[in-house]
Image (cartoon, rainbow over all chains, first blue to last red; front, side):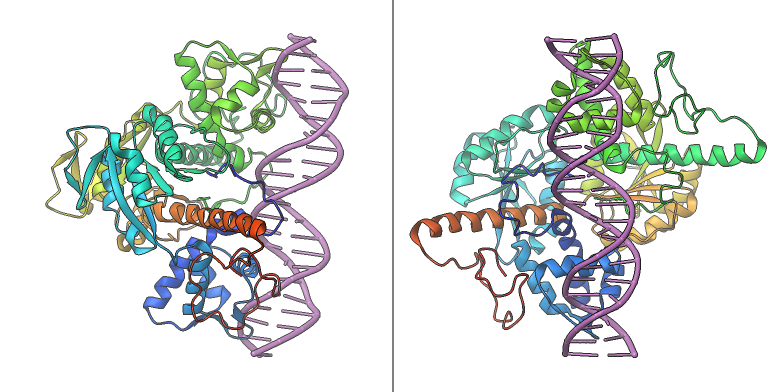
Length: 260
Length: 260
DNA sequence: CACTGTGAACAAATTCACAGCG
DNA sequence: CGCTGTGAATTTGTTCACAGTG
């Protein structure tokens, strides 16, 4: 849900569906685990279970990559690991910079999963002069002033923004001007970037809000079940403020279980 | 991309599309910013720009909530803030526990955006006895042994897992047994949970891999553009291993720009 | 015979385009 | 007139179900 498909609108239809791309890392992880256990082959059924999807979807996904399975047998684990890695571009090493070395930035720098799969933390950058030189996760923090030089010296194309929201847009502009074309944004802001730059965002509070929505709905359903049994009219779960006077809800005036 | 739509498969069609739910927090954030600047009304166009979506989508999204706008004018900011908050269940307070107080867990605990919007960190839990009692973000860390009691004493329904991958499944089982029905999972594993439990996952390395895919594609396109100009044949960007002998690619044997 | 690969059916999400209201 | 709200068209994603192959 992150990338605004900012760049080229799928020029000549050749291409793997975005939804499939988003699942490839999942398959890759499951396959890597199998590989470590020296499992030679998997069926679509088994692999799908391990990746948490259904097998039809997995087979369809793989069909976009090519015919890499063997009918009656399944997929060769090692071979698939290789193919997916290559498709994702993980056979090369991607230098990454992290900008904003606060709590989160430090946590990201320390995150092991980074190095394991094709990514290398090339530099840590922070605006606080007091941080400069201090090592975090074994890498000395550098000052924002040198951002452009760091990017170009290291040939960085992928940047991670873990700054406060207020700084994110400006940081992204500097990153992009210096040559970054993919950004992973942890700051709770919408970045506006030129075409050709991909942005994905990770936002704790958005995820929690989505969970809260479903959680509230569950509470509503419970109440409805009870009410259905007792014949009561159900009021929407939380307080409904004074405002909601006389506006139309989605379906007229039906006393719905969900807040109208 | 996270929730496996684990629970009830949209029982009686009444309901807001998942894609819309996922955008409501985005709108809410943009609206909150406007509200702080005391802007009284916004058009769908303006708000859409602020939220990083297009205006048709925004209007369609809002139409699922009801008719909250005024034709010729736009939307009342305060009123919309209230309606969306209510829809997302943010008019009530959600106590949340964070399990796994390592680098990431600590960063999450310190994250301000938590409290701001209806969420309250009710407890921090870690398996390391040495951590017990130590305050993180002003909250004393408690030991995993007391997990069940903490959950039920605080009426927690939402849990955040920031443990190592190996511990995540077991932690989720304990959380669920104790009453949690929504989980935000930062551990790089697929959790398997019973129906009725929602899981959303946040995974740095998956996001980076998706970016790498697009990044690689960009490199390919550049090369293609150059090749088109010079008449060269283009080889797929990174090394292609020895394995790829004689398998079918997605579209026969066309010498494609993208790795076959 | 157990599996993959895939057309065809279906469902969800997005976008278009405009009627209709304030 | 300027905007929202929404049917209809389109695109994207998922699932079904089975032909075909090792």
